[in-house]
Structure formats: structure tokens, C-alpha cells
Length: 566
Image 1: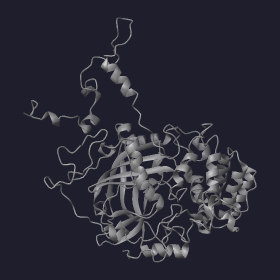
Image 2 (image 1 turned 180 degrees about the horizontal axis):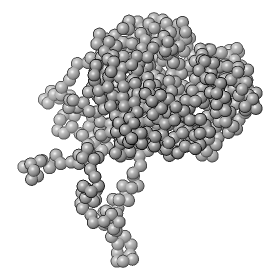
Image 3 (image 1 turned 90 degrees about the vertical axis):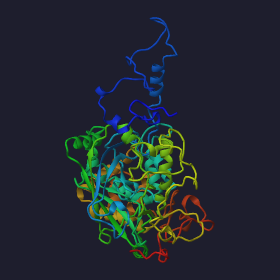
Image 4 (image 1 turned 60 degrees about the vertical axis):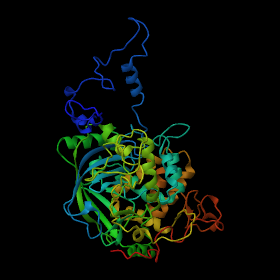
């Protein structure tokens, strides 16, 4: 016999409602132990007599202390310090000619959550550190969650995915001294001086954009190349841009010292409280597969390279929609610390490209969420999809399984069958052009890798920006304990501009190398080496298993055998 309550609900249907709990006032609640038993005072304890030891039977105290001991989940290895809020997205300029995603149809909208962050520091680090900023958006569309896991810079320090853990280790504390980069920058510059493809991001980081004046005043970039697929099955490559409606502002290195450690958090939170809702335009750059091949063959720009950008004169921005943040969170831990973003969370019509760093992130992000938050992290309200159909799959149990799909079969049953929807994207056509043998691959530095950094120095930075850049770099290098590292890095800067390198030599008092043609790198093949013995990274043998390729991982002519684009 099924037991019912007085109001007719089944006992199994009684549970705490998340929305009700989130919005309830303290005056409307009753103090209880975790099992729901009312308790008269949170400070009471049970003990033997008036001055004796405590009693193990005091569940209230034991439960209180045990839960307190477990209040923290592991902080993020990267992007640990962050802020966030809720809002909404709306498509203003439909993209249905290029993409079949429902969210890009005319007038479509959805709720969003954004988490901004610094990258290298711990959860208690300073908001105004010179560091890239994370810009992650969760679009809760009618076809599932689409996570745009972006940064405030269009490029990054690397293009070979296996380098990522190594690079991040150099952004953390020294294993012996436990000092951060502010007191000892040796590890930081050691890595950069051995991996010169990082130079584009270094130019951005050490420039004015290195410390944005809060999260409202910065743009966001996917960095990675994606694919958009339309209803006809044709596809194009795509880069996403999120352009701040507030414009951009920066803080100088000197000014950063006077700011609150939580400057960006305060600015975002109180702006929303004042009704000054920050907004961004969502834009795309697109190119056909043939254009991607031509871009490499003619200009040596690689759409799969996270250190390259697409020229906007050739591939102009096209606005798709806009989004605003208009709601602060009620509980930071529940809604921001536990929120998770995953670049492999895509909806029909959006697909990944062969960008190797993106491909590695498709695995790494959900893997870290399962470790940090738990196997069933997507059941948490902050992460759960909000779709107009009843979701089902055959994932069951695991730690903290709340929605465990009732008595429905946990296998593909013919007795109690589940419903299916036909695939809307022909994956064979979208991804089927890749054929080849398994190879080992490591990119090499080439003259084209200095083209975009050179443009920044010569055409984007004004005189004041150049002076600040030199001051930022030389100041940061002042705690580097190895002059050979500085010599190598100045040699890399010299490939960008002799003017830049000469200024740095004067500022640091260190004479750098005349360029990189005489250097061997431990992390990157040197395609600019005059002596062939210096070309292979880390003393590898060129003749046997040399892992550099003529195209440096770019799509060459004829790569897209089955794709015509739109």
C-alpha cells in the first residue's frame, strides 16, 4: 500500500524545492538538524555534567563539525578566482543561413550564466593581477546547454595541447620556495623563452589589455575555431567574439596596487544592483573550408592555431545577438563555485574543428568537473539543462545521484522503449574529410608566427602603450634569477621588432641574443634555425621520427575533400 500525506502527495514526492529554498527568507525557516528535526539552539552541546567531556551521541554537534570539515570542494586548477551572474541572451540578427542551431533563429532567447575569472592565481588571489581573464557563458537553449568557454584574449600561449599542464605549472608557486611569480618570475620566463610561439599572447598580456578594469569592460573570444552547420548540411569555420557594449578599459601596473583584491567582483556585483546591466554583442567570423586552405597557402595563417588570429578585414564580424547580466546570484557557492563549463557542450549546428588544443579541452574540462564537483555534476541546478522535453539516458547512480530516472530501464529496452529524435547534422559530411596515417606532431616556430605580434607593436600600440609595455615586461623580469633566460626572451622579442628588443635591453641591462636563428628550444622545433642541428626541439633527431610537418598542422590545399562550404 502506498503511503500518502494529508494533502494527497506520495511520500516519495516530498523533497526540498531548490527555487523555494533559494528564495526563502530566514524568517520563514525553522532551525533543524540536517535530518529535519527541529533544534532549539545552534550553540548547544551535550556533555557529562556541567564540566565533563562531550557526548558522542550529540548528533547535532557531530553533524555540524563533520559537515564543516567538508565545506570546501577542490578549487579549480586554473580559473580559481572568479565572479559571475545570471542574465539572458537574444538573437537579434538570425544566423540560419549558416547554422541550424535553434538558438540562432530570429527572436530566440534563453537564460544564461556567466563566470569571469583570472587564470593563474588561487581562489584568494588579486582581481587585478596581470593575467588573461576567463569568459565562460552557459547558454541554456531549448536544445540543451551550449557552453562558450572563452577568454578575454583572442589567442593563447600555446598550440600544442600537451604543453598546457607544463605551462600552468609555471604560473603556480615554486615547488621549493612556494613563492608565486610576483616574487620569482623565473619559471614563467623560462617557459616562454623555450616556447616562442607564446609571443603573440605575451604581447597582449604585457600590453594594456593585461589588466582589464573589471569584467564589464573587456571583450570575450572563443580563440578556437569551431564549425557551423546549416540545414543543407554545408558548414563553415567560425570564431565567436563577444564585444562589450561598455567598451574596454584597462588598469596600469601602478594603478593595480591601489585596487581592492576583489575589485572586479565588487564592480560587477554593484553595477547589477544599481540596475546598470552589462551587455555584450555576440558576433561571428566565418570562412569556408576553401578559404581556410587558401589562408594558409597564401598568408600562412592557420585556423587551427590558437596563437593566430583571423584578419577582420578579410573576415569581418557579423553580429548574431546580444546578452545582458541582470541578476546577481543568491548564493555564490551554489551558483558560481559549482557551475561548470565544458567546450564539448554543444548543440546541433555547432561542431568542433580539428584545433588540437580545443580537441584536448573537449576531454579535459568534463573530466575535471567529475573530479572537482562530482560524477553527477550536471544534475546540480546551476548546471542542469532547461529543455522543453523530459530528458533521459542510461547514466545511472554514482555519488549524489538525485535524478536517477525512476524505475525506467537502465538499458535500451524493447519492453519499455525510450523515444529518439533523428540526427539533424550529417557528421560524416561535417567531419569525414580527415584521412591519414597516425603521426607524432610538435609544432615549430616560423617567421609567420611573428607577423601578428609585429602588427601589435608597430600599428596598434601608440607611444604611451609602448612605454608601458617595456615597463611591464622589464618590471616582471626583475625577479627572474637567470640572465640567460632574459637573453633568450629578448632574442624572441627581436624577431618582433628591433626597436622593442633594444628598449628592453636598455630597461633590463641585459644584452639579448640577435634573434632566434642560433637558438635551440626545448619545447618547440626551430624552423628559423640556420644550423640544422638546432632545428629539432630538445635535441631530438631529425632523421628518425621528426615530428615537425611542412604545414605545421594547418589545413593545406585539398584537405577538405568532401566539403564545399556554404
